[in-house]
Image (tube, rainbow, N blue to C red; front, side, top):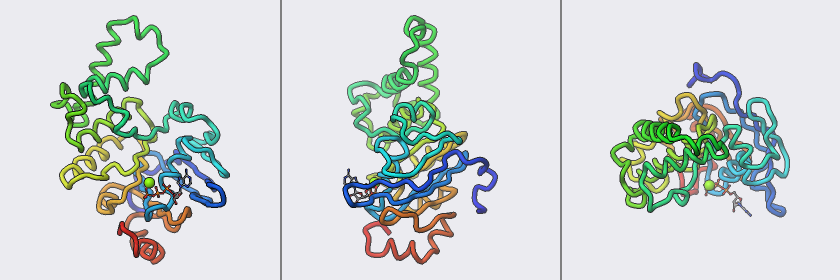
Length: 257
Ligand SMILES: Nc1ncnc2c1ncn2[C@@H]1O[C@H](COP(=O)(O)OP(=O)(O)OP(=O)(O)O)[C@@H](O)[C@H]1O
Ligand SMILES: [Mg+2]
């Protein structure tokens, strides 16, 4: 594989034969994934291919019917969601997890507090509270949200809300970040902004994203895995998979091409 070669070192995530059955239906059917440290990896495929179900299996939102998932060599399949998150594999929260009546800065502060919950010294120390604000402002700066710090989250334009959603996830400092359709429902300007944001936050961490917008995938992702009907039908760089006859066929006659 050529693209992103320098960034591809050790496997951070090794997924073997993961399967999820709902009754007799196999939504995810024996999927293998190898995700290298530091890469941006896209999971693409037609509607109903099993992408979101895969994410739910990786994060522990859903239990596996079969298969195994290793994070940095350690088996994480079977662990509860919060244990997986503590080990550094985190998915972006949905907008509903943002508190609309609080400011952008306050939302970020809550997210940072979530990370430190359980540390009692922290609650006693004024100094730590200031550290928290410093970190919150730093994140807002990094994500281009600084000018919105005092804005009520509920009043943010849609694209900025999605950026805040990503920011609150970053507060957990994940090593592996999963994003499910980060640009969905956005206009062109917001799509470009969120793509830039993802590129920025991918420095020093691994990102796996489900994305229907193929130009975004092409511009952003080092490697791509294509799912159809619960199975991997192709993997490689964007130019490799987009030239694959099975991929073209899987996309024909679907809404997302
Ligand atoms: N809890 C469930 N019970 C039964 N079937 C389910 C369940 N969750 C998902 N499915 C089915 O599994 C298949 C894969 O769904 P999934 O949401 O993973 O697809 P997807 O690739 O994310 O699609 P989209 O691009 O539309 O988001 C679909 O046919 C869906 O109807
Ligand atoms: Mg989905």
